[in-house]
Length: 320
Ligand code: XIL
Image 1 (cartoon, rainbow, N blue to C red):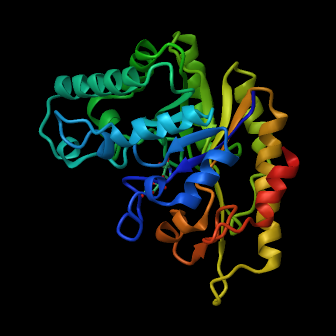
Image 2: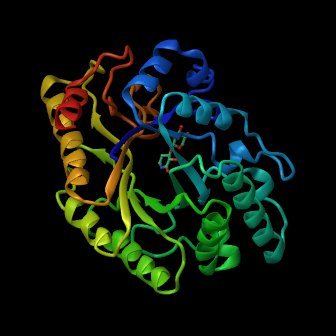
Image 3: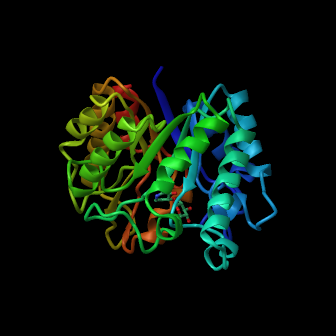
């Protein structure tokens, strides 16, 4: 009943130029993916810009292949994501739609994508990153909230639930590992939604950690307060980046510190009854998003670029 997952690097990957679809082409990658994990999350393949590239065209092949792979390997799948401010196609962001049309576009998308995979997705990140650091809804950069108002979030959960009543429906965000303004905002919002009978089932912390900022020591306490509301909780995108020395290779001490962070994140989840899903955002530095997105930082996953397990890998293994 406890799932250990990874993001699956495939189409739409940030390193697509250098490595076309690792999921399909990298045999070593595939083998580890099938063996070491009980849950998988498409890293980009279910995002709007990838799966819905034109208004009247969906691209399901890559997601179909991942879900087939998962089922052959007795893995569950986390769907990611349905309502987000980022990685939306230009036709959507730059389109000239009325509120009514936009609402219908979102309803149709959710119904189509969630419906296609109904019964095959364990958890859906329905709404991703809807609050800013101050705990305010992203009314400027999130097209849905900006154009349709905050009520659209509840509708997204309702439509997803209708399309797949078995899937557990989640909020997902970064910088919400600890108790802070942003996680407080989720805490307040889910209470409101639950009171209104909106089908919200889970709260997930992404867990993009950096040794620059320290480990969020109140992670367990934060998960617990959502658990006490009756929600499931999950860690969905864990990685632990660090400032790389000039050599480009982390020191022994850095790797030990990283292992400690991974282990503490897993232990916090294991300590909370309804936290049954623990996912790392890629398992090899070869395809990690970190160096591309965080200048000077890297080595964030549990295996080197050559798939050599780091102390973090063994720390997770021994705690499991
Ligand atoms: C990242 C992917 O890892 C990259 O390949 C892509 O270029 C950008 O997005 N929060 C999320 C994830 O919810 O979808 C993001 O994934 C990382 C931050």
